[in-house]
Image 1 (tube, rainbow, N blue to C red):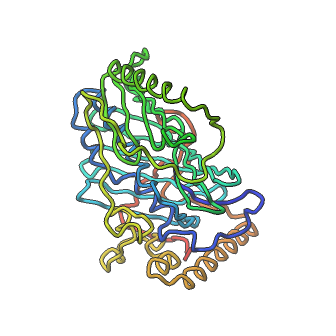
Image 2: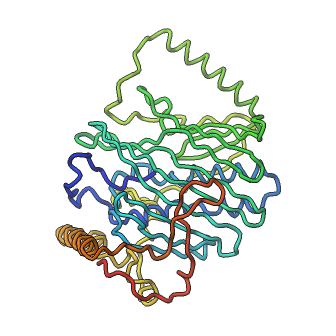
Image 3: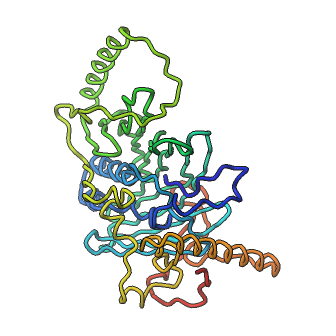
Length: 400
């Protein structure tokens, strides 16, 4: 989902200059999944399983929406770095920890303040370098539990690709299939994030179906991950698609082109953005970004608040919280040279600590998460160990 490293395999020892970064840690960037938490609360309040799945699907799509035009690279979390966020207004609290450095794995655990949900997962962004672009495949399972319904949903995020990393204007697309499973009912939602294609006709498009356990289509979903998601009756959707395809083929037969090249420039999305098929229901619509967003690394309002630190907070958070990380703070304050020096110092400190551990044959111990099977899928996962919110922090590593 996110880009934790723009690293070319054989050049992996090279540190990226700080100017490619945005002043947030990857742990903070992960927290942006939670911007549209109201969709989880809404899902909890619904009695129909299909309607709940619609809201969960909208949440899964909305969770990657803040990626749009976010071409700055978040800082790589240091091993043992943590981040917490409590949003009373949105009804959740979240904790994350960098649980592994090679490979880089970030684990998180969020819960509803009214005990209505738990959302947790771990992300290991697997990178591929394609010459002009970097592809990040976010390995790791997202698990959402709606406690009042005793339901668990799991999915993995789409692949994210940053184009023109060497020269030209950077632009981002996300593609691949996202399959959300309701482990209690066997219902699935299969969403396809479309690659943009040569003329950008499909840029940002998402579409798919919710189906019951015998694969009968219950409803169709469509929209753009940068904007909105709608649901509509499957027959209506298929009729619209058929008609749309017929029109496209008529257009195409009048001009033949090959469709293999990767587009250099970001294709401009169709002007009429998302055509709303009559009879559709709007499930989610993006919150517009603040007017100064372009000067602020294209942050959303939610992202802009992630690194805020006040005296009261400083007295309760653990010393590993990334709000206390000096390189990110310096960059946020516009002190680029200081940020660069601090980043080098922290990376060096981390390397030294690792060497010392290997000398004394001491293993790194994660603090708030442990490895174990995901209770719903059985696959290896990082699970929350508890006790973080007791505010009883001792023997924490000195990472900054």
